Amino acid sequence: MAAVPGVRTLLCLHRSVFLQRSFGLVPLQLASTCLPRKLCSATTRNNEPKPPVATENESLLENLDLMGVDVPMARQRQPGVFRKAFTNEHGLAQFLQGKGASPQVIASIISRYPRAITRSIAHMEQRWKLWRNIFCTDAEIVSILARSPESFFRSSDNENLEKNIHFLISLGLNSKDLHRLLTTAPRTFSNSLALNKQMVELLEDICTELGGQNPERFVKTIISRNLYILIRSTKRVKSNIDTLRSALKLTDSELLALLEGQLGAILDLSNEYLKNNLNSLQQKIISLGCRKSDIKKLIISYPVILYIGPETLSAKLDCLLKGGITIKQILEKPRVLDYSTQNITGRLEELQRVGYDFKKNGINILDTSRKRFEAKIEKLAASLDN
DNA sequence: CGCACCGGGTTCTGCCATCTGC
DNA sequence: GCAGATGGCAGAACCCGGTGCG
Image (cartoon, rainbow, N blue to C red; front, side):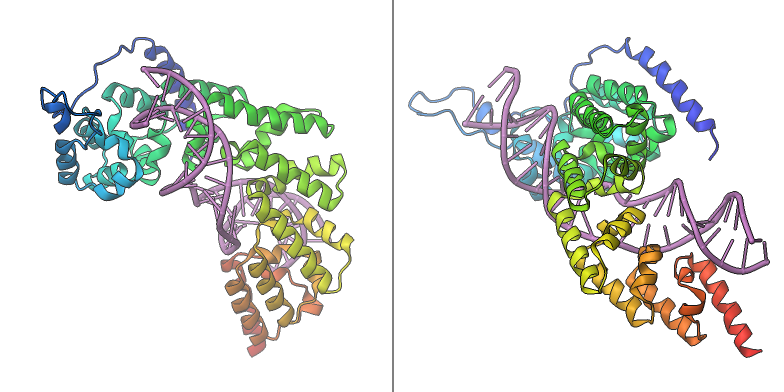
């Protein structure tokens, strides 16, 4: 895709921010207007000692059932919604249908996030409009809602959403970045503005502390390389950075460079998982006869290795070693670990079939796309026949 | 042309805990 | 005390192809 949609998106943004001032409050559209049983009984008997426990709104239950909502699931998730006297399930359904959502998708949305039916049409219209600043079609939004209803419906604060969009733009993120961000980590946009600011400030502080000259650029880089960063807790990010720094005895500038590179993705991992992976990686590499300095070098050149769980990593290494590759070769070309164990196993077999010599030719052949690999194998096989 | 190097794409919700305001 | 709003957590890699160089 070219830059055209991006430009349109930004234009859209300005226009709708302007339009928004003319929004008025529209009264809540009601669908299930039947009062709960207890409220319907006009007079309560005097001798009834306690106010009645609110019961479920029966017409609402019927409506939802007719719509194909998984009522037990919904009830388990947000029981309070079912005790409300006024809800807007029909309004929601009509609204979503108008945006192109199928009845099945609508039912699934309500089943998974029942509170959606408490939103007014006006609220949804406005929120949708804000999302449309970033997405070019309704269908895109529908697909996100189908995937993650909570991201759209959890907050009732449209003003906050708008402020978030402005804030993210102010960080220098362009419309393509915003699009990726909202597609991939929609929750970012329903975070409170304060929470997002907190993370950004943390990242800026880290950059400055490590002697970085351009905290703004640093933040932009981190976010666009790790779209999930803003839905992580600052505690997680802080703790992971500390873990890495102390375990690897990194200098400030080394750490800074790593964070701006691939290591950014590692910040996502839960604190324990990262520690665990670090430990088992160290043990495994030491057990293969390498030095501690090799481990540091390995992680610096290939940070993504920390993403790989202990079992997977072990299996991959063992399978490479069994295939006649040395640990030294792996340390030099760690990217061969990018590929799945299954893929690696298959390639090793094919290479053996054509008598590939890793000592002579190296192992780069393993780090290449399927297409290229197969083309190479074909060539090697042909030269065997001749 | 073939290869090594490298950057980038995809991927991530659904649940629980805690607060807040009525 | 309730429901709503919001924060935070667990879970855990794989693959493709552009590009520049010899």
